[in-house]
Structure formats: structure tokens, C-alpha cells
Length: 414
Ligand code: RNT
Ligand code: ZN
Image (cartoon, rainbow, N blue to C red; front, side, top):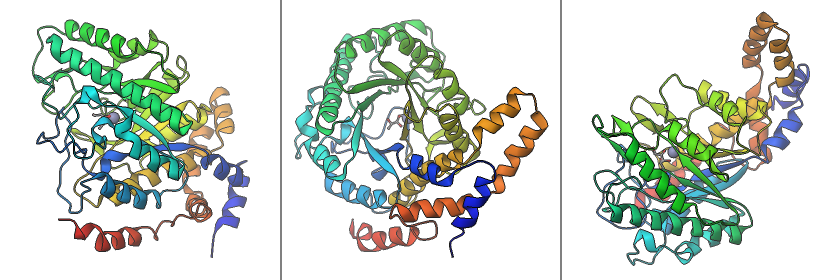
């Protein structure tokens, strides 16, 4: 027996229209990253290990090894995720028919199968140049390297990727977020912090020189990486400054890339004062790892609340970024993406105007009481109704489908 009718009444009593919330939720796109499906391996068949200070741990069987396997797994995950979806690719997922193509020579044609895949499913594509796991990363550096040839190579890669992003936008009739994240940094105390940043600035200027229709550019900062503990060239201040002075380039917030008590919801509200777009990588930091599967945490709900409260559903570009190799990868995708949707629903079921009034009128005791009382409303009934209406299995129903896929498909992979 669905508890939805009762939930409708309870939310109505605090001024919330559940039907309206469900309608809004169904329109918010979430960009699903392809790299959870194969532990950020990509299709280049190189012997290069994952580098750049990011790491996957675990060796769960059934990892996708090709475009066919990855898209089959992604289809399984998409079938378990309600709402509007986009996909997010890395350049290392070019489909080259077994041919080795240098990263600075990548062309739109190498991504045509992805366009066919996305078009058939009504998905937009977001994109990322891949500045890691490659022999041209020298001493851990790419766009900030002191070596002219290294910088030039990666600038060419960045330029090639933006053209591919424009191709996605053109073909699919929706924007393509093209996000630059580079691993550049140092393990130990630098002797010069500024020069690498000035080189990075110059490289970025070259990459972004061309105006391209449909491409939204972003830069993603980080505080440290594994083996790069002392210094990250692309720091938060560096990129916020860069974005603020380069119209059309936005500062992407990855909530795994800050000190543990720095909260991303607060950063969203701050950046929205200056930028008309705020791209996100939603993840779950844990100790040194910035990429655990997204759970339904306070932090996630706070991020969603800030997006909704700021009325910024069209300005904040929500993407996911996690990779766990220790569990079923389809389940990882489904868990994280469902939780993002859940958090948005949670945020849409809050009486933000009433709470705002309490703050502005200094009624802080009442505000605290109201915020706490919201936590025991029958949220789950609304969520289950949303899944059912979207034709997606609800909580308690989706995991058996993953288990079945594992038994029939994943276990057959060597
Ligand atoms: C790394 C960044 C970056 C990557 C992906 C694979 O710390 O978060 O976004 O996770 O591009
Ligand atoms: Zn990220």
C-alpha cells in the first residue's frame, strides 16, 4: 500500500506541493560519468597505469573492457536511475577500432559511436580532455611543465578536445560541458609556486582561444593528490581567478577537492554571486580518497538544498565523479546517481521561503526546530512514487536486477 496520499497531505501542511516537486525533479539533468564502469581505464589499451594522483582500489570481477561492454553496463545502470540523464566522457574513451591515436590527434570521428549511443537514448554528452595516465605526463606535469614540448602537446590535446566537445553539442543539440582537470603538482615543498601557475595560465589561454558554439568550458581545482601532497598547480584560488577573468570559462567544484571542513554548498552560493553557471563534480571524499561512491549524506543533501534554494537548477550543472573498483560497478553507478536524485527531491520538499523568512526575521529557535522536524517527514513515500512513475525500480527492488546482470553477463567476463 503506497503511503503517498498521506505524504502528500503531510507535505501540504507545511506548504509543499509534492506533485510540483516531482515535476521539477524530472527536469533536472544529471551527468553520469562513464569512468565508474571500468575504473578509469579507457580504451587506449596502453600499459600505462592510472596516474595523476588519483587511484582506484579493488578488483571486483566483471569490469568493462571495450566500448560494447561499457555501454552495455551503462545501459543497465541507466535503467536503474530515474530522471533526466546526460553522460560524461573522457578523451581516453575514444573508439578508434584498435588503432593507436595520439591524444593530440583525436578527432570527432573517434567519438561517433558515442554520439550514436547518446542520440538513440536522448542523452547529452559532456567531455573531459585526459591529462593523465600517459607517457607525455613528465614529472607529473602537463600544462604547467617547464618543458615546452610537453606543454605544447597537452595544449594541442586541449584544443582537439574542445573541438570534439563542439561536435557533441552540434550533433546532439544540447550544450557540452568541457572540463579541464590536470594533475600537475609536487610531492614535496616547491622552490617556486608561481612560475608553474603562470605557465598553466598561458596554456589555458591557448586552449580556450577558439570560440566554439555549444561548448561550456570549465576548470577544476584540487587541494592535493596521491604523491602530490605538497603543491597543486591548479589550486582553487588559481582557477577562480582564471574563470573570473575569462568570460565563458567556469570554475567547477568537485566536493572531494577541499579541506574536510570546507563545504561545497557554501561555495555554490558564493560562486553564484559572480557566475551564471557553476559546474559540479559530486563525489564523496573519504580520508585521502576524493572519489568514493556518493551516499545520501548530510553533505549531499546540503549541496542539493543550496542548488534549489538559490533557484539555480539551470545554472548548476550537476555531474558525478566517483570510481570504486571494489564493488559491482553497475551498482556503484546506480547507488550514486539515485542518491543525487534523492537529495534533489529532499531539497525540493523543503519550505525554503518559510525558512528564509525565519532567518531574516531573526527567529532562529523556530528555524532550528523547523529544520530538524523536516527530517522525519515521509520522504521515502514520495521517492518511491517518483521511481514508479519514471518506470524505474524503487528502493528494495533495484538491487536484484544488478545481481541478475552480474550472474548472467558480468561473471562471463574473464
Ligand atoms: C580528479 C578529478 C577529475 C577526475 C576525472 C576522472 O581528482 O576529480 O575530475 O576524477 O576527470
Ligand atoms: Zn572531479
